[in-house]
Length: 68
Image (tube, rainbow, N blue to C red; front, side):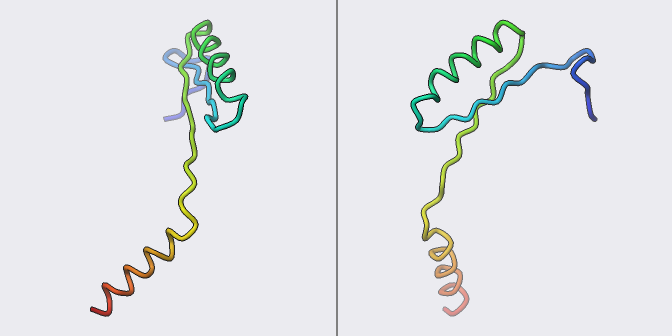
């Protein structure tokens, strides 16, 4: 069900990208204060990059499982 921002029950959501940059912490504090002032909630997004060889390790495991 799609709900528009002006309808009852809508909660403002502020998305903050959490990374290793120097700007990340101040951005989180700013967004948290704004969410508090506006009655919204804070959503944090942190992307974890998988190791480069993760795919090949899984492929090797699958190959060994199929041939043993």
